Length: 150
Image 1 (cartoon, rainbow, N blue to C red):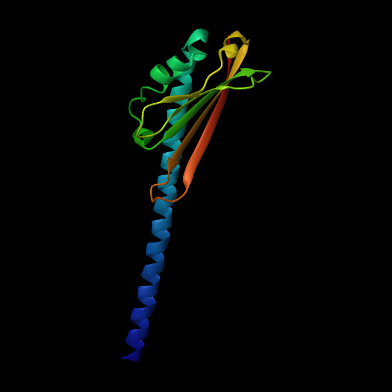
Image 2 (cartoon, helix red, strand yellow):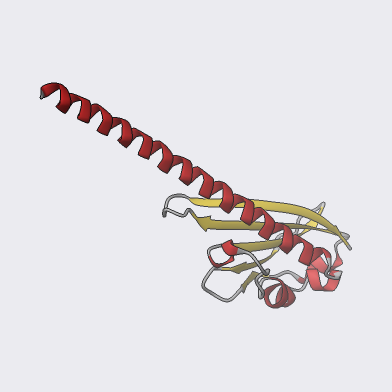
């Protein structure tokens, strides 16, 4: 009888460990899927900017309404991601860059603007995305920076 109790305890411990390992693997898979979706989301935003004209790129109202005002189609992470778009002159940065932000539940807003950036020869565009982990764990963040010519 005692041998059976020990055997059941060992088997129970074994299945508990297996469950724990599987749970951690699922968490890693979900984090990887979120990262992949965020990278695709970021790439679509950058493509939106590449197809814009120079006056549009340096106009905070256009960035707020047309770029961050719409969510790219087919992006499951779109409802959970916060975006911050920063436009700065390049190679000499401006004292104040253009910064536009959108929270997952709110409308986009212009945080800072600078009309002097429109006279620059190039712009450094940085798109930062952040989203909560699926289990409410850490906030994940990625940033993409591109240079756009006038």
